[in-house]
Length: 117
Image: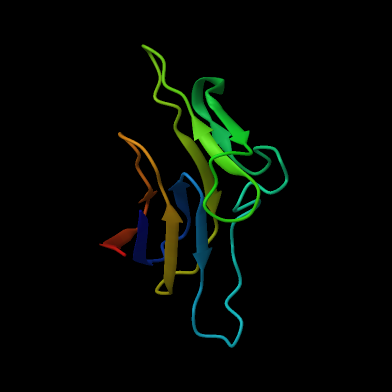
């Protein structure tokens, strides 16, 4: 499933994602603001996952050759985040593909409106 959000930038925003793209539209070439957005580095570089429960896998993937996999434990839900600096009063687009139950793609510290595509 693909989810897309339009969010209004605050001084900073934390991103929780399965695999995500955060772009600032408006220019001819919108720049992706995330580090290692598709996990193609083969590592969690740029991301922080609680409990050591996040990993990069070769399959299944939606696009590219890598994806994020999160495992849960009895005391942790494998929350993987990346903090991104954004500009106030600027609209950004966040999108990502998620698979499975109990998957959350979200924004902390900003206003957002989600649509499913």
